[in-house]
Length: 497
Image 1 (tube, rainbow, N blue to C red):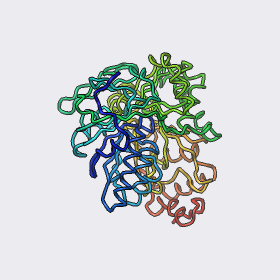
Image 2: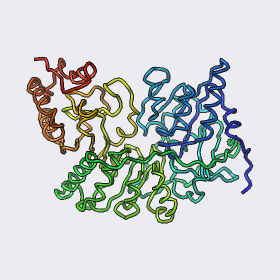
Image 3: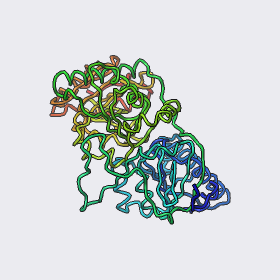
Image 4: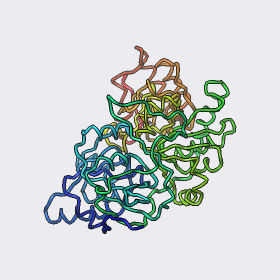
């Protein structure tokens, strides 16, 4: 097909971008993220810096990206500010050192915030696509994220046409952008499989400044094989939900599921698929990862709605080889739709997310190590947790070979309060916190979820803190953290009496 757009090298595309520009990049995880233009932009930044000239840009994406985008730009010290989420080690270090400004956001709020103008004008949208037509119809690749908003609002557009993704991806996307207040109406999705938007993004062709042809696979690293701990966490979640079905607290037809991304989430979804007490289900989630795709293929997951296909190379090849099988069973939507509080509440989602740290009363820290250093960001966990029919948080009971208890008297940073967290799960058991007072929650979490090496320590803490509605003491609540910082092992904590 003959296209009216200039064909550029990555270097020519990068040369169009100026110091101080704000760029909306495609990508939600490394899936669907640009690869060649960011690398060329990073090389240009290094050249400019070597010549003594400033060169940094504002970087906004759907969520995290891959080494060719966040990694390359961070290593070139080319990122002035970043939002809403990241997972790159170099960028993380620069954020924690104060070299790069970072705004942590609920992912459902990103697109409305961009439209509001809070981040200013977007000079560029730099987007990976499987296909573009002469009249400006763009087929995205393995994610949507916030790309539809970037494409609409940016002054100019650069496209990476990536032939590693087939043009027949057209039809997997459902692009819908709600009106902003005071003109917003309900989002008319009533089941996980409803479609309400367009399969392509329709642009004014005059906005497309050029296209770069690539053939680069997604830089997803895949997932670790489940181990004894993650398997047990998965089994505990599955057994809890199967019991909820038996009790009638979940309908026999089940409810849609949301699951975070990562090794624990992958193991949990696998365990749900293997549990005979859980009927075939649907998913309304952010990230469709390996275990989800496998369950869609076998029929245990009847339909999966997400914003990203974050798959290992093996599973992505399986998806591409069976596109027609998956076409009626998978849809990719913008993140303000997948993470919409309205839809989470309407559909009655069971949400399963991972905690860095949990305290005795159900508060969860998802983002900051020892309350100070950013790990990745809150992502979409808050969007789902606050509006779930049942909200579940999982974590291993210890970290650093037992030197850290992930369950402490008080989390050092609060992302999800006790009012939103309903169920806590570790490899040792399940604490159902619904209908429990703060003291009852603390006892239940200690007995069901805490690692045996820490149970007596936390029982002793509770005995010292038995006054008030929340049995908490300011003299001791962060003593496990300070003990680790000073001596490298929480088990050495000494409570102040």
